[in-house]
Length: 198
Length: 198
DNA sequence: TTTTCTGCCTAACGTCTGTTAGAAAAACTG
DNA sequence: CAGTTTTTCTAACAGACGTTAGGCAGAAAA
Image 1 (cartoon, helix red, strand yellow):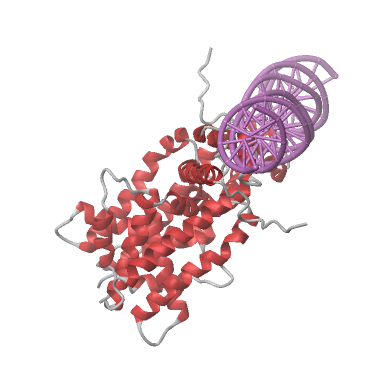
Image 2 (cartoon, chains in turn red, cyan, orange, yellow):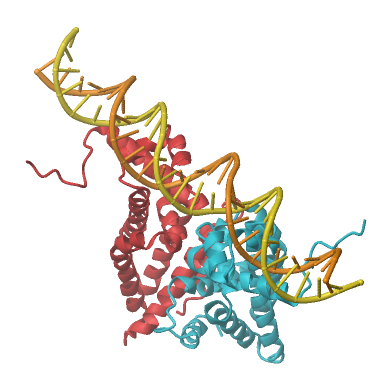
């Protein structure tokens, strides 16, 4: 009896494409209406399926939501890391500003996955949250390093954490008010920049 | 046929007390688990009633949630206004700091109503949100005035709005991470103070 | 005491939910 | 083409949801 790996169960391109579309639609739904309010029947209808068919690709609604949110963290993290590599030699304060801009842009226009994560995390079942702590902590560490380098010595852990909470709060809260027709990521980042001590 | 006023339908002290406890428990529930996840059966059980009995005090779940959230805005607004009156002659920047501290303290320890509002607003039915725009705008105006006085002339509306979004974002986001056993409102406000230009 | 009103309960309605088993269809493979 | 595997559908289950109608106990009023 061969041990079939649990993760990559479906290998055909069609299954992979269907799974991918389910994830995309789920991310958009979660962002728009929330986790509890997203029904699998509505979700399936938007993909062109029936609710039961989703269970060929995901074992449960929780597992689907977990995957959406996990991808959400990895997407911002990857975008921010890539941008930081492109300005590796810049001043620490400028690197913070770059990270803010990329984080914000990912949330507001690039990735429904990332915004779905941020909006739904507080209300998702505890088992789902538990599976996300690792990726979340990893992204938090990136920001801690970034901010510690900016604040310089001595690295006061509590102070770094407060700064991270303040900055990410100011960024993530934009999901509540940002209107692409009226607001601009660049303009908001410029305003935030004036709050960062030189 | 006498026109019975719609608002103060129940006048006896017992009904008023019951209504008050329903609101309190609903606020706590909404803060903890969210709007969709708060079932009227669970809510009623915690009050010591059955689900149907809630309808003697409120015409619908939406109406109950609306009342909770409306009270939530009014509570922070009132707390902040009272504190600002006590330091009417202070420097504009210090008044901003006072407002931040009071807003934060209301969210994190004083009022489940306020935190329920902030956490649930994005996912509440559109009809509920519509009934809250007026109170929300009023509170936003308070902050706009406060920040405009701090930034001084010329009062750039877009800049004031950005600052309000940044500050309230940094404050409201604390609902996602604040742990009373580990964190302190005063310490976080102190960290935020260092971000405000002199 | 009788009557009226208040506050809550019981029991149910209709609808929606996530989920499952098994059949059908569609897509590959020989 | 037949045979096999992959993907989707059908149909239902069991339970939860918000909501409603009518009744019942206790307090208040007469």
